[in-house]
Image (cartoon, rainbow, N blue to C red):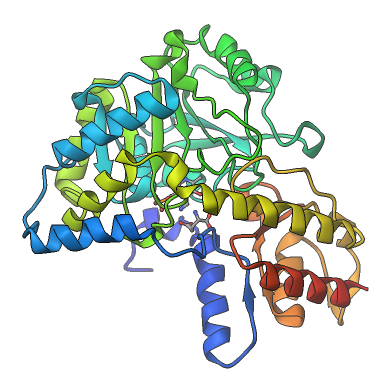
Length: 394
Ligand code: PMP
Ligand code: GLU
């Protein structure tokens, strides 16, 4: 019998982090691995943000912060929500956490009772399912189709709702599919949800600025959804600040208060220097980070063009984030370099072992036919990676 809890024994290891660790390990052994597994910008944090952090150290920001974040940071978040999203939150509705990941974990912990269902349109971000399960919830995966750009339809949403449905979680722009819900598409989903007033929506908008098609739409923008939507965001992606670990929510005050209470017993406030730096990040105009978005857009065209030439890859056109999520089921049942490919995990491992390219299996995102390729890598790396994949498969 294991000394460990059923809770952790029943939990999967984060596939994105596991693949990144494996790629790192192989690199350390001297292998020439191209890592396209981790969703992490390859840019440096912008200088104006780094300066704010240095200043905070010199100004002796070294104490515990309020559990839910410095008031100045929460003010900057309120300003950001108003400026970028037309959302009008007040101070008691904001909680700053150690990454959007902790923000999501808080929400699950304060809302779910054992057996409560959470609708997860597939593909979903890797950690949603395990965060829900570890908090006693039951993930209800709803398959979407590549032909509908991997978006949930109102009919699918309504069919998945049961008396036990407590929440729906989705990301837009979506990790891993890159799909972006338009305002009309969100409204159509909201029209279903208004019939079920007890369901809370968790709208993960961490890729908000990495959007190649235009305006970002938020579920909370609809007055009839504002009081039941938790808007999750953070600085990891658009500001190239993954390691700084700051995320936040705007939420109904009752939920925010509960997250504050939960966090106060688990981690306390997020890192003080990182919080000061994020004040500078959020008070700046989003145009300050546009050079990174422009580069991601170029890489998207590059990788889509290159993948088009790989036989057997079927890919939707991502409208945001920095991933492509090709369906590779064409290769299932085939043998590559002596390895029989039965599923996306086999395929992803085969790319790692025989092409030295790290990707992530779609199983981890609730779609076992696809793999996720992150194009948060240099254009040279993208070109070389697809060349290796093409050579292996031909
Ligand atoms: N949500 C999505 C959709 C993500 O891709 C990530 C990736 N890290 C997170 C949340 C968590 O972000 P972080 O904890 O770095 O703020
Ligand atoms: N969100 C990123 C990804 O999906 C970072 C890794 C993680 O936190 O899982 O790759």
